Structure formats: structure tokens, C-alpha cells
Amino acid sequence: MTSKALQKVRDFEKKYLPYVQAEQPKFHLTGGIGWINDPNGFAPYKGEYHLFFQYYPYDTKWGPMHWGHVKTRDFLHWERLPAAMAPDTEYDRDGCFSGSAVETPDGKHLLMYTGVRNVRRRNGMIEAFQTQCIAIGDGVNYEKVDCNPVIQGDLLPEGGSTQDFRDPKIWREGDMYYAVIGNRCADTSGNILLYRSPDAMHWEFVSVVSACHNQYGSMWECPDLFRLDEKDVLLVSPQEMTAIGLEFHPGNANVCLIGQMDPDTHHLMRENVQAIDYGLDFYAPQTLLTEDGRRVMIGWMQNWETSSCKLSSLRFMGQMTLPRELSIRGGRLYQNPVRELERYRGIKIDYHYVLINGETSLRGINGRYLDMTVTIRPGNEASMFKWFRLYVARDGEHFTLIRFRPDTSTIKVDRTHSGFPHDIVNVREFPVWMKNGVLKMRVIMDRYSLELFVNDGEQAASFVLYTPLEANAISFSSDGSVLMDVEKYELEMN
Ligand code: FRU
Image (cartoon, rainbow, N blue to C red; front, side, top):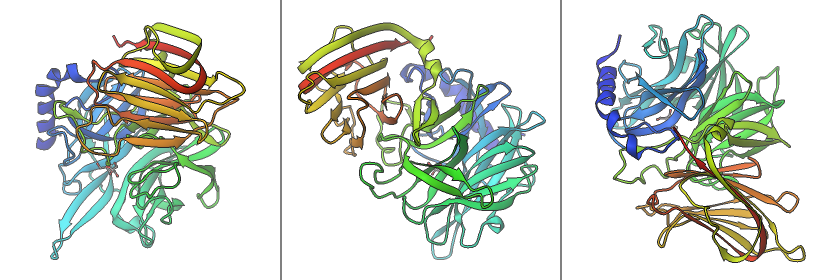
């Protein structure tokens, strides 16, 4: 049965969504209208890929969480479906928080999410009860099951807190369901708990997969655990990170832990810990496995740190990254836009071995909807250039700068002049490595965003831009001589 709260949101969508198309990015998902945060329930169902998201359509800021809903066949065209869930029961009255989805053996679409109920105590403090809940549906309509919540405080290991117990990622293996869930434990930082169940209704605690021990931030949100290229990979989104070199930035960060699961203890033995995305706008990623065996990740292309900074003229707030194919090479996480993007490449313009020393622009190299790869190497074998700068979304007043310095081996992205009407952090620097004397930067732009992939996906960095759309020039400059190739495609969505 559709509750009043869910009907209200569905009516609202019917009324307003038809009017908001014009201001949307071409192929990055937004909520259409209102606020979105984390991707949820990113999973195949009956031959299509469904995606839900944390959703508050009534405003461009966070509010009581609903689940918005879309589906796709190619990860780039999204078909909107009516909102899937609203906070409309006693156990989720303060929000249907993040979660995931799986197809059941009998063809049902099962959603697992965190129900939030806040209780104000006598001293005025709010105590949150976060529990794990299930809804079952047919790909459009979902019923929350009678036995909710299916996991609550009594199934927490000692010291675990129901105040921070959220974001289940469910999957099926053999005859069992498994789920990893974020929790705050006795040392006040996060850990990731593994549960299992034969029917998704009756669960037992299995193990602590990995614990933060206050090393990488505090509470760990939005876990995802999967096997990839002979490694076990755990993705988490830590809160309150303090900076660690140029790898992890302060605030809401993102971390990938790579290693092997111990088959007896179900604990992840770490071999490498790295950032997932080095940009200013990335959080809470989630993955799925495609039918042809690709592990594809999508993230919230925003961050709590940047989420109050918006353009008042836009009726949506928050977009998702491009879905990205993941792999592990040399013990590191690699990511590249899904290959389906190549189908939408239009006119190609390319240049080879352009020698630059100073500032240059190239005829036909411009735009705000593009897929462009810039490859650079020293133009003079005897002396390394000092820096190389790539300016995009440029006009007389605006620009976004991507600067590479070989001496520090870093890329700095600066979007100070990219239309932001608030004084937030707009610069991010991260380590990169030239490979055989060459650095490759693939830049994807789609109206209000820039995603950078370095060296065939060795690093990714996501940024929201609010630069006026007329600012579409691109230029290159260097201190010292650089030999450059540029390959640019217009991106066209029909
Ligand atoms: C992460 C998060 C989740 C929570 C959701 C609430 O961005 O804080 O932990 O489920 O957002 O919207």
C-alpha cells in the first residue's frame, strides 16, 4: 500500500519533474528537482540496472530521507521511476537512510536500508536509533516487511552503538545473504560489521571486517565489500578525517582498503589503503557487478563539506558521478568511465606532438560537454619542464585550472574561478606519477562537472563547477617545453 507520505512525494514528482529538464547535465544523474545524496540500491534487477538515492525533493537541502528511483541499461540514460520509499513507519519516521538492493531467487526486488528514529531525551539530547530494515517490491512499488527492523541493537557486538549503525550493503552468495554495515564502536571510531542470513529476515552477526581505530577518520559510513582481480576490496566513507599527506583530505573522505579476507575470521587483511577519488566532490560510492562481469561504481559527486554551496538558480542539488569500471593493477584501485560512454562520442578533433612553451590554444578544442585526453611529455629530453597547466571552462573571468608539476609529482585542481558563490575550499592537490616520462589526463565535462582520470584510471578526481556555460574555452601553458597530444570528442546525448 502506498502511504500518504509516499503518495505526496510521487504527486510532487509528477507535477514538477516535467519542468526541470533544461537545466540538467546531459548524462550525469540528478534528482531532477530537490536534494540528493548517496547512491543506494545500485544493482541489476531483471536485466536492467536500478539506482536509488537519498532524496528530499521538496528543497535543495537535506531533509527527511526518501529513496528516489531510476533505472538504466547503459549507465548513461536514466529512466525516472516514482520515488520508492518515504519515512512513513515508526521505525523509519526520521528517515530511510542509505542501503542497497538485490534480486531474490524468486525474482523479487529486495531493498535493505537503515531506518532512523530519533528520540529526544529529558536532557534535551537526541538519541538516534538506527536499525536495518527490508522492503520488497517488483521494480516500482515496494512494501516494508512486517518483521522490520530485521537487525537492531541486540545483534551488535559489544560496545557497538545504535546511534551510528547504518548503510547496509547486501549481496547473495550461495544460499545466503550477506551484508556489511557501518557502526561506531567502543573506541568511538567506525568499524564494518558482517552479517549473514538465509532469508534476509533473520540475521546473525559474523565478524568485524575492518576497524578504523581512529586511524582513518572516525565513523565509517557506506561500506561496500567485493572481490576484484583476486583481491578483496572494502570501500568506506569516513567522517572527520584529518589530513594524511596528500592522500587523504580533511572532513568527509573516502577510502579503499585492498587485501585478502581471512576465510576463518572473516577479517580483511590489508595490503594497501588509498583514496578512491582525489577530488573535492565525491562521497559514499556503491558498486554492482554487471552481467558481463564488470565491477561498476557510482558515487555522490558532492561532499558534505561542499554541499551547502549551490547556485540559487538551480532547482536540483547533488549529482552522481559517471559510473566507473573498477580494476586492481599493481595492488592499486583503477577506475575508468563505463565503456558505454564511448557510444556517445561525437565529433573528434585531435592533435599530435604539439610543442608548447608558453600559452597556447588549439582550434576546435573547447566545450563543456566533452571527453578529452591530454598526454604530455618533456619537449626537450635534456631538461624537464617546471609545470604544465590546462585551463578549461574559461572565458575572460572564469577558469578551472589543472596544473601538473613534475618536481613535486602532483596535480593541483583549482576551481576558485569556477562560479562558486561561497568561500569554501576550492583547491585540491594530489600525488600522480609519470609513466615512462608521460602523463595522461582524461577530462570529462558535462555542464556542471569535471571528472579527471589520470594515467588510464590510476587516479580519479571529481569536481562540481558552477561556471556560466558560455565559459567554454580551453587553453594550455607550460614553463619549459612540453610535447603534447590532445584528443577531444564532443559528448552527445540523444
Ligand atoms: C552518508 C550518509 C549515510 C546516511 C545518509 C543519510 O552520506 O550520512 O551514512 O545513511 O548519508 O542521508
